[in-house]
Length: 589
Image (tube, rainbow, N blue to C red; front, side, top):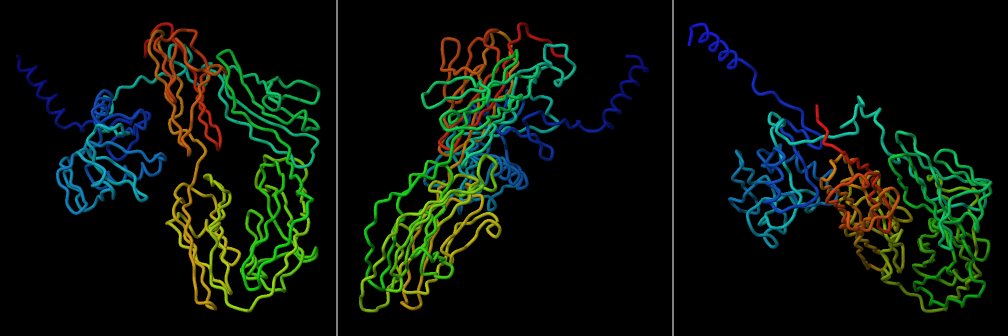
């Protein structure tokens, strides 16, 4: 080798030694960046530990190995905020030492023994050596398993190695000459969904509205399904459709009450909104049959039941009572009285001064904070026939505190995330009575928890899943020197929400497509699939198993708009995506 070449090589070698270390790359899409690493949290499909290892390696990473307290804090905080299903998550940790309910991992440069708490049930219910994140008692901590069960898992890689992550990011420009996604044609997707509408009294008009993106601009159609079960397009002089809005003039129960659905269509396919209901509020009437007198003994507790009213409205009903047609019952002024959310009128202790005729008044509660109601501002009310209260004389005495078995009561009966929840406690007994509540740990109790009606009513504003737990009410009386308590386990349910929505697919002809959506809800959601507005049930060309749609061999006829709808008794949500079937494998730039 000539001296000049040797000198050039030496100069290049010296330049390499003096150069900066390996550059850091941005984390790819769907990978989360933290410090010098990229993380991929794989919710679904859940896998055994061995298959999780294979997936991470095939995608340029490894199963998570927690190397510091900082990294552990990042991971469990991310899971707490985004894993609303509270899954178990595989890591690459291996149990090497158990002592005093703490865990040391053999892949940690600085073991976390004494800092990471085992889940309280780990010794009883788990065996094996794989370290798993598990949600318990309000946080994620470590437990162990043998790796055979299917769990979610976390892949990681250094940012300097992010270029190794296998990605085939195709978008609407893939295989076309369009310079950017904004100019590329695509199918319709809704961004504005209609909501149920209830009409109070009467109104001159009401409207339902949907709106979708798409290129070319979608065209809209509305249908109605009436009581006869027939679905028809909306046509007629009383209906005006402007883009995605349908306006109904002089709505009537017989003609316009029913189930509505909006569809949007362009040359790439059809998409549907979930069904919505247009209904007419009807408070109904009380029975006009006289009610038998209530005859309690003096100095005892009693209750007067409000007669049933035949309401067909989804609105809640508020109740009040009137004595002798002239005196409204006010429990703040007379705290031995209590009006429950179901209309019952309770007396902690009656005397002959309570004798009289009592009338229950029911009123539809007008939802001033919601916009899905139309019509009269004046809410209708009904008053029952009189109910006589005839207190029977008895020797005076002191009544011990007793909370009836019907309490604690909760309204609404089945709370759903986001609603205001009212918990009631009431006791019979000689007063004054003092009420106390003992609650689970709640977020922001100062702004979300209210005590009213002599502390007999506990209201939680905007209830969350974390508000579930055991609530205890204690009532005591200094006069009788007695106390009683009742507990109630508050369970919260939730409308479905997508944790893994559908993504647009730009797939090669004759390739296999496995498409998954995943929604969280309580109760667990069920799934239905649609292609271009038609319900899919599985046939020779595709298979559907719950939230997974598989097309073994793609053909041109399977291109179009697909929707995954997740539903439970609290509602329906939809996720929409487009399938493009590419005739030839496009070359990436």
